[in-house]
Length: 196
Image (cartoon, rainbow, N blue to C red; front, side, top):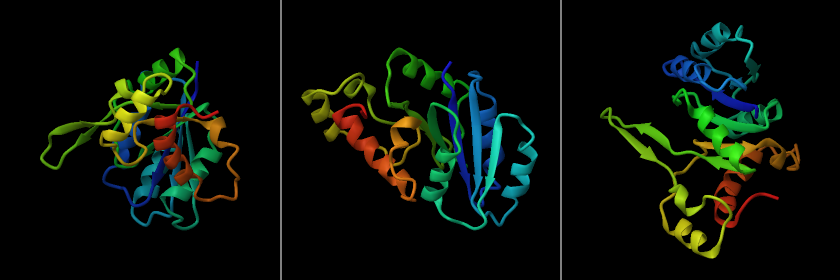
């Protein structure tokens, strides 16, 4: 069974944090860990995190001051034990089958990066599904898939992605913006094929 590491970076997210963490804890897939990075929060986020700290699937890391989203994600990846890393923003809520969907895609093929579409709640309460049409890049890349991929709108960010951790271990540890390298790879790998 493939272990998935959820990395949640937190900076002043007291209004959304509990809902986010509860959505991860309630996964139907049970081989996961949650790494919470408190990035120097000044609101009650740290108190909320303390209440979750007793859960055996949760690791908590406290940054002494705010180092930013990218650097905090880097800290999370370095502390992950899972074969795949998934970044969840502290204001995101994932479905209870989210990890299972990722696992099912990973299990059938040995992908380095896996993507599932995400639902985004709009200000008016409606839900909009965002993501890249998987028909364009499922499996290995070819010229036709690349052309279709380039022409469609791409959702910014890394929500919905699972990254094989070992693929990014070769990036020098001194590169504090390694996560931006990962974001770059998301677009290039999905266009040109798996990371080797």
